Length: 477
Image (tube, rainbow, N blue to C red; front, side):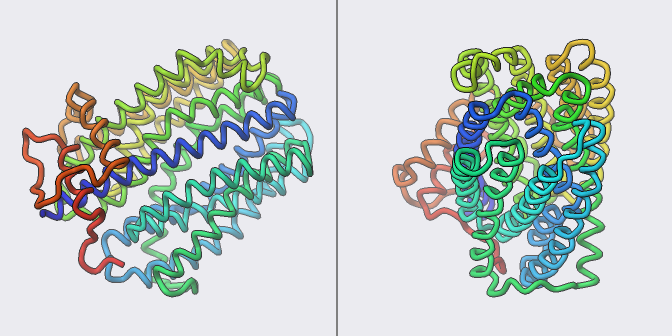
């Protein structure tokens, strides 16, 4: 059995499993949002969106690209994983301190410009959210770099369960406020982050952080180059949640917040695929190989398109029935956001490939152009078209980012751009992938060769699943 075949099989299975976990997470987040929408008025929900956005923004800035560096260096230097894990954990402690300071500073600005008032408790909840997010992302990236994909999937599942449960408890029994909702979400992320540390300790034998000057310098150099792109990607995704309450009304911000959370259902296939593709490309033996990226792009775009169409068909029903009649006002914005998930999915796949090839700076360039488009489009369209203008600005920004990253991908890898787009045979591959995950013992056992030009990738993945699952490269834990 070839190593390439094993890696494709393991990757395909992991993508299906993580997509399922992410959908479960979205379902839990959706239900938590329903609880919040029923217990809070739209204006309070708009304030919640501001608090959550502040926490996410601080986390992505203070992170310093540690998740990028962890995955890349563990893929390139598997024999040195103990040293890498210790150094990343040391830097993570610094990032947590930076997050607390940034939350206080940014909160003063956001309170004055967006909410027209200072909300100290909201800042505390946002700080918890920021710290928990950094911890979860760093520990999760270490698991992915060590190829502990199953543990990563379970962490994602536990995050969804914890978030929903804590939202019920805190909003229902402790504090029926925007601050309570933000705090519940932050604690829901903290629970799996702490639990995942125990898994990491079992894998590495120690959780003792180490301040390794040489490795820290290399990690920050690579991580910060890519983190600029992550920050700009965040602006593409979340800036509208700050500009809508600033330029419109808090109740409209609450309606738009719900529309964005519902649209996130469609984005789960691309987030799962990009999470798994990055470490795969970083660790592949042939740096010019584009086969996995092409297949991943086709299947991800196909899955994203199908889910978007299905959700679009029932969007008015979903908004009014689950969240309340007032949220039906967000139907048109939701439809535009669903369409924007396709270019966003392509951009995520291309970004994961480029980061895996050690070119995170190119991702930053592409997302930087997208961020400029976001600011211009939001400031222009939100006053003219309201929340529909915010959704349209997102569509334009994601499309612009995808076009730039397509050019970068072509220049770096030499891959064929048309090979990234779905074709009819991919429908069969998606079905086979899901069947392989649900019934791994159904495929015939025996030796498996790498798929040839005329063979289905899904057939290859199904056979690998039947023959024992993940095969790690020599030297990996």
